[in-house]
Image 1 (tube, rainbow, N blue to C red):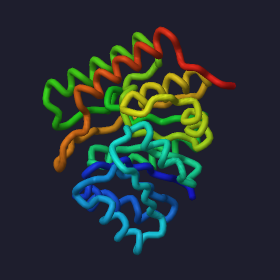
Image 2: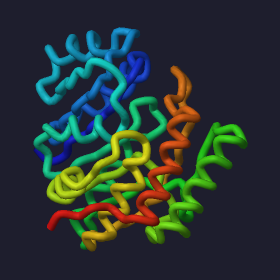
Image 3: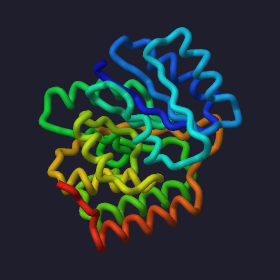
Length: 233
C-alpha cells in the first residue's frame, strides 16, 4: 500500500460520511480510523463501511486516550507513507497527492500542511482561536527552535520509517505530540518541508481542544526545551 491515512475520531460520524468516501476511492490509499469510544455511532458506521471497502480499518479504544497515542495505535497501517489528519473536514484530502509527489521527488522526510507559510491560511476561526494557535507556534519556533512556521498542524505526511522512529521515542500522548514529533525529527536530522494549505474550521461537531490540553501543551514545551527528550540510539 502506498499511503496510509490515520484518522483519530471522537464523535465524528457525520464528518466521516463525507470524508471517508473521498479517501477510499483511491486504490493506493488505506484509512485507519482510531475511535475513542464515540457515543454517536462512529465505530458502528465505520464497521458497516468496512463491508464495502477493504482498504478501511478500525481501531477501537475504550475511552479518550489522547491524539498522539491515537497516531501510534493507528500505526498498524501498512503504507510506506503515513498521513495524519483531522477527521472533521478541516484538512482537505486534495493535498495528500501533492504531499506524496513532493516526498517522492525531494529529499524530505516529513511534510507539514502549513497554515502559516506563504499561501496558507485559516478560514472560519474566531480571533481567540487564532491567537492561541499563533502564540503556540511562536513559542515553539523561538523556544524550541524547530525551524518551522506551523509546528502545531496535525496535517502531515511522514515516511514510514521516519514515523516509526519518532513514535518509538515519543513519550507524549496528547496534542503535545505534534511538537514533540518535530522536536525528535530535528534531533534525528530528518528533513521537514512545509506546504501551504487552507485550513477550514469544522462545520459539524465540536472541537476537542480543551484548556487542559493547552496547559499540557505548554508543560510539554517547557519539558522539551529545558531538559530535552531522552533519545535511545
